[in-house]
Image (cartoon, rainbow, N blue to C red):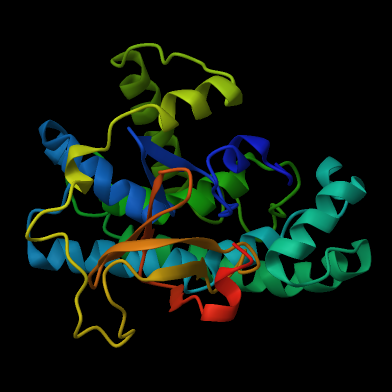
Amino acid sequence: MTLPRPDLSALGIQYRRIPLLSIGRSVYCDTRLILQKLDAAFPANNHLASTSPEQEALRTLLSAWTIDGGIFTRAAQAIPPEAPALQDPKFTRDRQELTGRSWSNDTIKLLRPEALVHLRAAFDFLENGLLADGREWILKTEKPTLADIEAIWPFHWLTTMRNALPASLISKDTHPKVFAWIKRFNAALAAAKKNVPKPTTLSGEDAAKFITSSSLDSRSQPSSEDQVDENDPACLKKGALVESWPTDTGSRNRDKGRLLKMDKQEVVLENEKGVRIHLPRWNFRIREVTQGEKGRL
């Protein structure tokens, strides 16, 4: 949960948020990019995907709402002061470095009431808006889709955290449709897990060796489509030495490498370990490393 992360350091990766997805020597960062790549890699599971522009627009809006709209930030601020993790100075120092704000007990107590006000409004939006007509899933589908996944995760997390949500504000009684939706999602997730093979567990050291000795993900091989858009506002050339990092949290951890691809959706750079790091454009910054900085790589 906290730095340092030697497993990532062995891959030459500075990015510190989890999860990450590795397909061969191609490593994908940021959950939203990972979901897109998995959806493209396994088209047989197309029941997760949107089937119309309207559905895709709603999925995109929900993705932005939970992250850029502040729902996750408020969920983190709602962690109860007595939570075991908040009693660990190593954890709170790590989170302070990640988010750029204090995680002292006094700050947690100060921010929590305001966070609960915003979270109640978010639960209200779902209860009295998207779920008000009794639909089982966000897009009125028979099974959960990416729109449900994009929307549900911070609310699901909050309901699993002891004492995070005061029952007088947010509970099965005050928001029955939201809690029923979360219960259905848990059941669908449990059923899906029964239909997949048991994953192989690797140590961090073995995983790093496996990744660095693997071939590239075929979807990341250079092609006529995998080029650097020279009309992009970033004004970068293919092969330039660049660094990229998230602009919301974890901005101190910056990955450097040779620019292989840049379009409106993602950036791909190859680091000194030969690992290709895929980063989204949204809420990420990219710039060319200056001549003076190159000697320090």
